[in-house]
Length: 452
Image 1 (cartoon, rainbow, N blue to C red):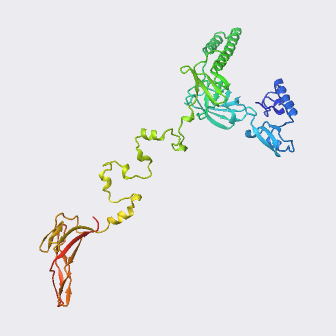
Image 2 (tube, rainbow, N blue to C red):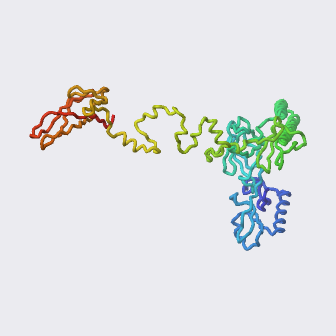
Image 3 (tube, rainbow, N blue to C red):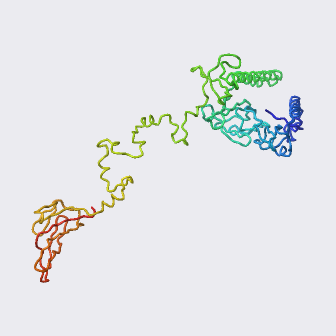
């Protein structure tokens, strides 16, 4: 609704606050509407003020007393209020969802405009305005300081001359679109073009024939009027308005046309008529069919079906895996040959410690009747059946303990000529007499390696 103030109804000039414009002649309909507001306020005991600050100075009213703030500079504070529990409580705004933009200016590609007094930008869903210039490409419009793009119904940037000076433009707010949607790309009717060309031709040919030129201009004016009426009729057949249910005919009672639009007041959505479907469908996609990133795929209808479509097996949802979950020979051998195990579930730290413990890589035993592993012996020389990668190995000999009289001796190992393929031993022994002699007796030879 448009809220009337005395400053507006009885202003001195056409543009409120701009003394350079023409003197304003009060409009009887506005005066009647303004007096009607005062009568309603008097009947209801309502308070009518211009700003919220003025309203806050009025106190000690009876509970449920209504009030109207009609033109606060902060448009979010304009609206209906009610006195309750010792304060003024906001009820709702004054704005219409359909309005006409005023003070249209700017350029063809960067339009500027204002809202009519008492209308809130947040409530506007449909607006009319008359452009001041043609566009040459993408278009933005700044309304009350808020800038948004204007695109076509498919969400694409506007083409050249989609908006034309003097041709009424109709824009709407649609769910899923960032900005406004232009409902009627400029479309100069053939009758306007023909009349305009006729007027220009007549004016050029009748420089001295003032009467003929005036007649041509009159014809142009008539044609423009007819074109405007045709454009409105066409718009009225395509945009039917607001309804609580899907309409079954257009506003003239004729069958619905393909592409007709209306606003469903219950569902709060704009719908378009499809002749192929013989039904009304949403003009924009239903957001219930979208995935929302904040849900992290929790809005999937069937997660098991999605996993199957992606080729994911049952292992995808297990917290841990047992032997029964793994098919035979399904783990590549290379995965079992890694130097370290890092899976915390099987205590990789302990496995890595065991990896660095000494390993027996070869042995030879005299005591065990020539038992050997990876070693052959010839005298004091031992040869590896499989050569070692380097000489970083340790040789240990466990000698036989022998007793002579009251004394004992222990064979003491000596090692020389060490290589990757073989090594030689030269033993030492402490005799009972105290001197040292060569290694003798039976003993075991063991070769250790700490790490490869």
